[in-house]
Image 1 (cartoon, rainbow, N blue to C red):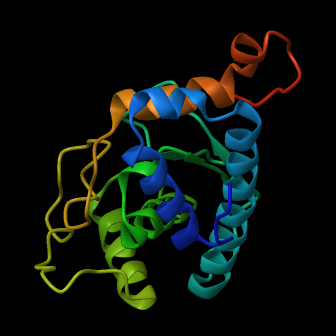
Image 2: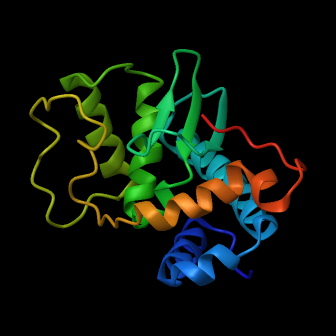
Length: 188
């Protein structure tokens, strides 16, 4: 599998995988998907650290790419500054959406809820990085009921739940597909 080592490259590879018929996707080796996951993990960590430095979020302790069991969860940040981003984000969003998820979790290192203060910080951070779309109309200003997708509104979103589950299972449970337990990846 050839892919560019960048957020954009990972998104393009994810789109390529999602365009495959299910029968062909099932034939993709566990090893190549695990390698893709590890590359995406490195890229996500580097991009998150870069954004944290640019936006002056200094409470980030660690960054990890994971495959969440909850398909709606895009990321988490605990009170210690440990950020986890869902691998599925690369399969569901365009570049700005992926960066938006990362910025969202970075903002949680400063503000641990979805209050108006959080959304103001998030909006300001997105503006500084330049990832708000031209149709942006201030949807962060009003307090929004807490929901996993409330901050993704203006970004392009794709749905591939059944196809992504094939990839997730091959990454998280390769022993099932390979007949042996060679790899261990944390599935949260």
